[in-house]
Length: 516
Image 1 (cartoon, one colour):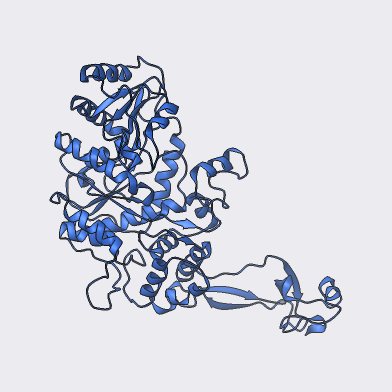
Image 2 (cartoon, rainbow, N blue to C red):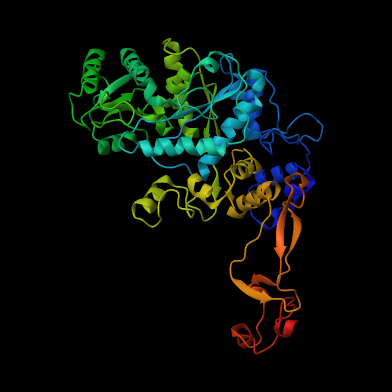
């Protein structure tokens, strides 16, 4: 960015933020590179992993190497890199995805995931990079068409002004519906599009003896699961024979049983130190209409089971998600490897985690935001006081400011708690560069210039922007009567004068009585 808009002007030293954020601000202030989306991400451990595992170099990232051509690698990053190097041979194109659950509006925490997934795909344009838009609609109890529409609108808004994905294949020739059109690659995808495939994957696991139908209650299942210091106990139904499991699961599919009667569980390891690997539930019964599939299904897959299958089915190569899913990665890999070995999908996606965006004094829990809306503490999801993207949009914050904020925070595996004022600095920085100037009087005070001719009116040409002459001028009329802000006049005999014992405030340089 140019020096006038550099992050060096931001009072970052007065705020507490993560080391990653500080180092990125230093990098931003020392570079003159600029991309089509404004500021660019600095190289990070994820772009390094993708480059090393695919042999494709990213473009458009900030040069923070000082010309050395290499980026320092931390010990934490090295572990992930080693894991990625042992993965199967890469099969392109490089594909990321943004898969929110349509059970609420997107908030500032989602902005980081949206921005980074799209930015990574664009950075690997040499690998035909693209980002999919997918709705993770596996829980009909909490989902609604209102949320679907708001999510798509917010993603279109936050990516507004960014270049489209420059890929040349069959999808380019497909006529997309109005709902499917957006900054993402191809149509809007939904996990429900793969319900039949996910069901087939569950049947495959049962036939291999790696899944079983359980009838423990939720409370019993918690007791059997064990703790971090105690191994779990196997369910008494864990060793049902394959034929009985298939019969029961097909009965679940046909709606023969009430909710809670049975669940399908993966058969992995009840003594695993990772609680997520202790025979997790992968299917449950829900007799509810789905906003996309209607009453076609009465069993629905759990996220940990559907997520890797949907990624693999779409050809997602790098599943980028936040750190709370790090402990779920072994299960992700377990499921992906089995559907791949079964020939149900033709590629293996890789999950990589990064830190989520946390803001000081800002509620980003979707459950708590829903309560604010339902209890009518706010006027709706788009209330300007809400940290939702629709609320931020109503404040007048431009989408480029949100992207700049996410890019400035950078990508790491270290949790950080960011001051909200940094986002406001980004908004000022973007608006300073883009916005034409104007002024308004909020509390007007009429001023009459007594030695000015009554009918005389002069027009003054004032630049619309002090730094961008191409925006032209605006006309400001000047005559006998003008209006100023009430605070620009100090009345010695008025309320402010009485409150100050008739003394002028020190350093006051505005209008005073008697024409001074």
